[in-house]
Length: 278
Ligand code: PMP
Image (tube, rainbow, N blue to C red; front, side, top):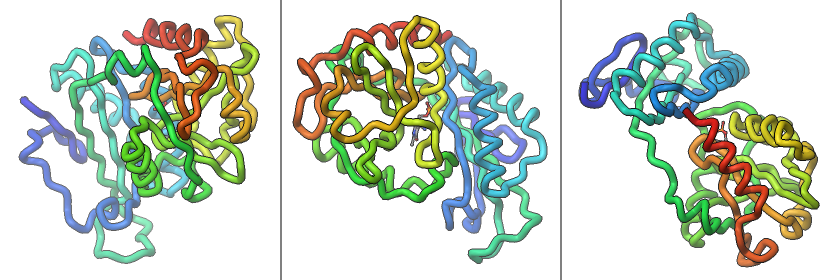
């Protein structure tokens, strides 16, 4: 197949794929998702992504009958794509029914998976670092659910792009939460700090890998609130995410972080992270 996709248990060509106009994902953003990268044919941290997917779906009362089969199908779709390095998008919506806010209890979810060839960000971003802006976090208070309702993230990311920045760092009550599609870390006095995994952030798989691996490398790692002031005073700032990997941030709202160059610890973590991928 040239561009295989998966819908509700079946593999087919992209062109043949159909979803009902009354899918609740389409009308209400009533669904959850995951993005899983596969390197050299091996999905990275698939189990953790599926654990988070289950939690997200359960939080919204979306019931999937067989996650084991779904995981096998995800692996099969990656295999069918033929890509050595692939990025899988998996979306589960509550299902299809005539539009009405209150949902029926017995809906069958619509499960869709697509796969693309994995394209890394340009090397230059990692070598020179990227810019970011800060914006108020305008999302709801259940950000730990990886829902497809991403409008605040979408609008904030667009503002960042318009400002010539890579990412918008969101701020709630004077404290950093995360990026629009990434988690945030700072380094201060050689200690690696990231905001705690409360309901106000998505607990990224990459975030968890970095916390674990940095500790293994002997660094002090802390999950602590980071004020806006602490962000600007940091020795190093970096973002993490499945697509973002470990991305140095060297300028925020026009002010440089330290000497305006990617930090040494960030570089070390980036190299280490790359080494873990297939
Ligand atoms: N926070 C948000 C809001 C995100 O959308 C993402 C990426 N989906 C992340 C953090 C990073 O998560 P992960 O490391 O699991 O890709």
